[in-house]
Length: 396
Length: 108
Image (cartoon, each protein chain N blue to C red):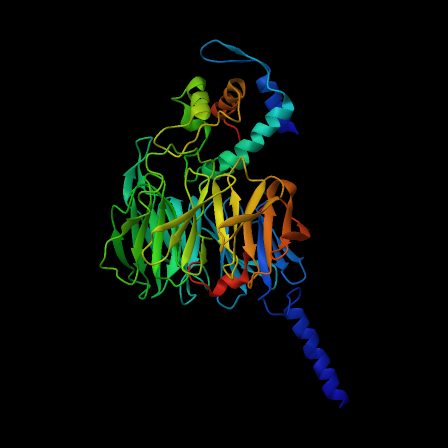
């Protein structure tokens, strides 16, 4: 008896040693908050509204985004400076880090969780890595174009998402293309190139079911739609008539499509160059309404139950958040958060939303029912907030 | 701190290519403009001005540009590209001051 207690204690000590500083818990109520200027991130507990760890040394995180491993333990962070970092959120440390490009704009994790794809501006193209050790698996350069300085360079790539069938979809900003990259055989990527999808696709999204890939266009009216169930069909332009003949307003920050809002059979999209949110019926993709809002929308995000849509805005209106009731299509509340409300993330079932407010150096947490602030969390110039619930969602 | 005093020194008297003598931009306003440059111009040009959807704003790129051209681009944007006019937020004087900083190579 005495012996076995001693043995148990010994084992416990060894155990404690091997996992010093690491948490033993589930990660389903965890997430990260990017601190863009400091190049650090906070690992947070979304139940207790607390910071668990702060991880530093992540480079330029000014436009950083993240995806999660399917076990919810690792966050893969995509930095502006080409850095791809694998962070263990239970231990609060960097597991692996590679600087894989000169200038990057986000990435995606494959359907099976084994591949991480990164979208690069410089050099333009896609690089695909092992999720295990971040070793390079495939390097896929983009179509060459002439830039404004007369140099030959690869098109910038944007709107990279995972889609079913172990594929990635990506849009090419300068060359106006959308590519679907099949990685079933990682050694031999199969690329389907859709040319002439529209002028200057600036971002894209995939519907939550993984069927439609939609690229927002800066260079012309409308959006480009690709039906991934029918790869034989060419992409088509939807919402083409939107805003035709009207003078566009200046856009001081490009909208993001990634966090777009699906509520029932309707999609809510940020208009470009207009202070409006567009309502579109999924399926035939016709516009069914427009909602006048406070400024140029950046993120238009549905609460997980689809009842509300929360919208933030580009400079100089980025001190405001508006909440749209999706049943009446009216604005039910306008919040003043302080300047630099950059990103929003809903708790997995939507009772709370976390909003990063850059110039206040804090994350504000709101009850989505009362639409009142309930908590604040100090953070150094916070931007992206990413919860582990993204681990099991296509396109996030 | 060193950064701010350097900027203040640079801005004491700025003469544009057209010979116009520009008034000083107050240090507090300079700090606001640099914040704007870093975080809002940075949305497209990168927080470190090393480029993003928009081109890098590093000194080497502007050797062919004079300060007036740069200031006009800041104020009125660049048609056919996503570059918007910043006229509502900057005076002529402030745009020239910012153009001078960019041409000299600023790392916010």
